Length: 223
Ligand SMILES: [Zn+2]
Image (cartoon, rainbow, N blue to C red; front, side, top):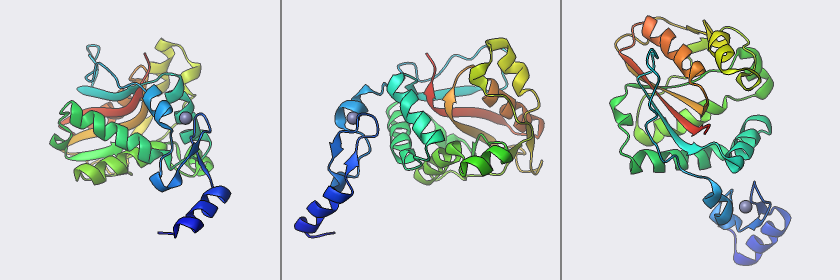
């Protein structure tokens, strides 16, 4: 801990600003968002998403609505190397999970949606793995980052119409080691739930490899 006068000088030269509105923050509190911006993120009022029939995914929970502040934060998280945002996202997800008694501890394995290796090299980190690691640590659920690999460079889902999103994701994943999912309950983690096509494609790959069931947890969900 720095003496108060040094702390003041430190803050003068290395101020912490709210990542959304740039308002000055007291760095001693290590916050990334001011209270008003934190308030502007909305928890999902329908914690368990009713899934359309025919999905392999059995359950999907999403903590926050993908409103404008959530979009800005996720953009910074994915494209501006603001990896420290994972702390804020994980804290919000834990708050949501505990508040709704979501049975995450029933799962044997927590697995992030992987990026294609080329995209991972370009970005330097997988944002979903930062979330899944934080959740794994908090709930003590084993974490496997390399269970699945992404074998095709899929087009960005946001550029596609609803129907194309499903065909775009067909065969997108494969198992690294096909025995690792046998009889396991797996919870997939991703930053955003849109149509569920990505998560469902990953769930299909895991079920084909013998998983007992596959659920999903995401930070946000489109409304
Ligand atoms: Zn703010």
